[in-house]
Image 1 (tube, rainbow over the protein chains, first blue to last red):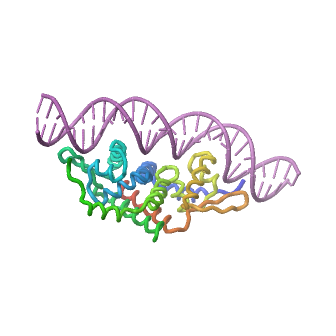
Image 2: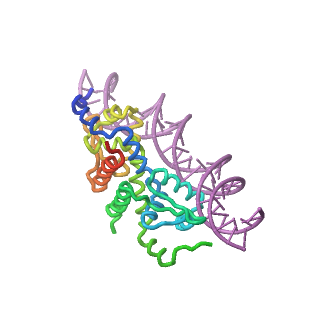
Image 3: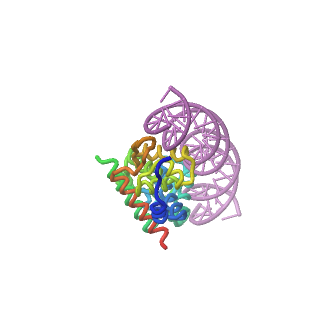
Length: 115
Length: 115
DNA sequence: TATTTGATTAAATGTTTATTTAATCGTTGA
DNA sequence: TCAACGATTAAATAAACATTTAATCAAATA
């Protein structure tokens, strides 16, 4: 049987480890952008406000499919919407979380895909 | 029929939009941490080097299940491993991508779960 | 108020993904 | 070289998830 951590080092880690609620929240946010479709929609909505029809056209997808992703992003607090006449306009939420996510997307793109 | 973007504004967006390859890469990396189990393993391995048995114990999971997640993280370039005797030791990879991801995890935890 | 347009919801389908159990592989030491 | 230990692989199952088509909803306007 090999050596494991001491009780003390294990305690240190356990204390520094984000609690279950935090882990849920963080992975939920990151998971949203783990889907390439949602990543592109989110990125788009960080740059401009769009209606569902235009997003669908931009993404080359059906509007029900886009609607589905918009609902997930909205439920996660990453985007917001407002009605204007018959249209629903979506854009990125104005929060620190969104700023960070937008930042890291462009940063990872820089790092991983330099050209 | 409502108004859409001009050809010019659409062109601007299309040019700024990360290409398909980049979107794939970014969402792949973020998606890895979209799973709470992998997020916790990754976070752990950002802080210390561990063998599979210890990770499994820490996570309260079977070692095959942990092995599965380690493989995914490794394939994505987020962690590395080395053999020491019978054990495989895993730790976070020493890359800019990993630094960024580690940074954002702790940042999102700060933002979303203040206490 | 009936029709049209834009958006969402629901049901159904197909795919991906996590976990379990059992079997196998690699290394060490008896 | 055989037994023991740590780790991985494989097959099977179950749970999540994305997409499609059809139906419904909400606002505008003719």
